Image 1 (cartoon, rainbow, N blue to C red):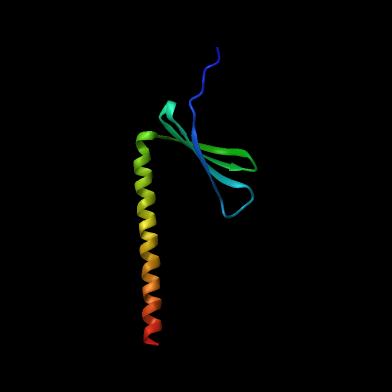
Image 2: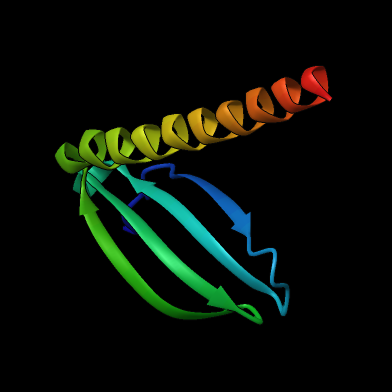
Length: 87
């Protein structure tokens, strides 16, 4: 009897450089893993297995980076606004 596979949750992020580069993120709940894989031209170039209990740390890192990017953008807009009001 064939073993039934647990449904997986996955998504693909396209690389803006093109050339069919992408990052695939796939949950493997049965193994408590998230697999990050790099693809080019429908060929997997490499994978990284992240334990499910490490995912919150990755999310926190990404969140901090996003917060910093927003803060930097907000500061630039405020500088431009002040300069246009002064001149």
